[in-house]
Length: 68
Image 1: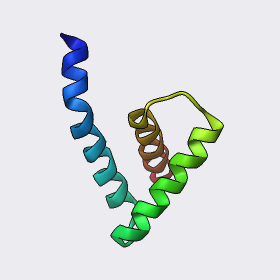
Image 2: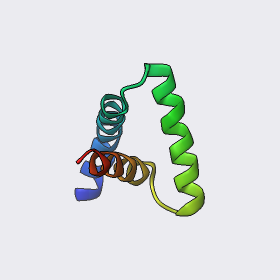
Image 3: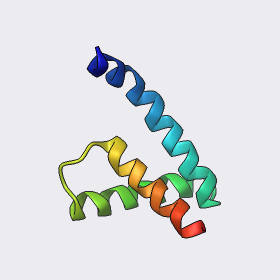
Image 4: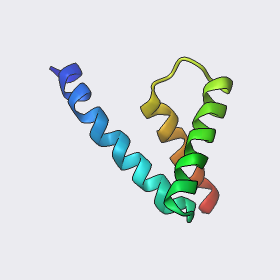
């Protein structure tokens, strides 16, 4: 049951993380999308094998941490 709930919530969570990144990046939408894709590619080469959701969480967490 928990796995089913996680599968259902995943697209919603990914959209939420992307929106949060766009807010924190202070860039135009297209530039923010390109920047996010570059960061995901870089992170995937450094730490392979994680889910897209994990990469987004890491990027947003690091960005929020840098803002403090």
